[in-house]
Image 1 (cartoon, rainbow, N blue to C red):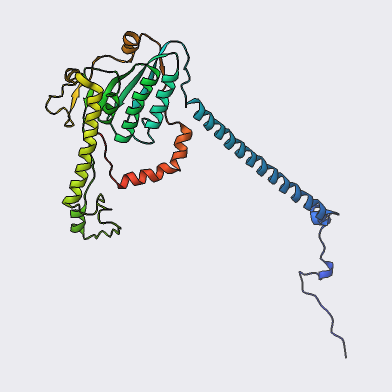
Image 2: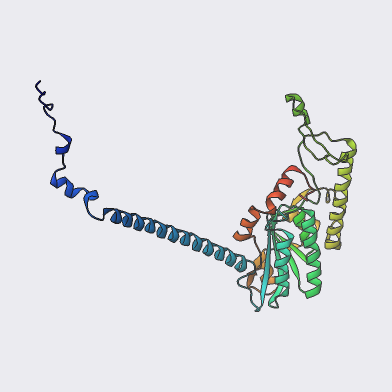
Length: 340
């Protein structure tokens, strides 16, 4: 029996014969001796470079935050006190601008601190309150009014109010405590009254079919809620409180202005406001003049130094994430008496 002849398919070579070309073997890194070690070293160096870059970036970020923090501290210290205060003869100015409210630039905290610094400076021959405010909190105005009287008696220095655009309501509550009030002929002065404002949405809610579900302990706890009806008794209670604060306001003005005030003028304490010229005629103001006039002609110290303390960047950032946020939320939901 004849053994069959072994044949191979044309175009193919046996596996044993398939070898890489010599040139390819030389270029293949896996065919080189020690290629595993070389590859591991390259990976290790690459990882090390990435770690070094990450550490440098973290260090840069930390140093940047540290520099920013130091800058904020410097702002807080440098702006907390007047930068030009000195003991040579000068007129001290404290600005009361904008709404008089807790946390504002014209808060009792800032104004009183500035006034104390001004009164305690031996070089300050007199203090000027530069007022441009529509009013605000009767509490903040009352604190400032009391401190004006106390500091003036303690240091025996004159204090004057100079009105630029507006000195209304709580701002005039403050001005009434000064020795004299200087205005421009076109200034707005007065508004001796109290208000409590808000909105009521009960009718609208009934029309759209919305029910207010307010749970309280105490029948009058939510009487200022804008989505709940207000009873006549609640309205009378609020009005009585406003009348009491209004009486306090009138007493402060009469005490401060004394015989200069034309108390028989109709509407003087009704919340009306007048021009600077009318204010002088009614005894709400004394004469015309600005800061330079008072410094030169009244205090006799022409150099003017600003002692105003304002909310700096550091304090604003702190308040942005602190108690001011909660306070703003409460004020947005509740009304409070305001001298405006």
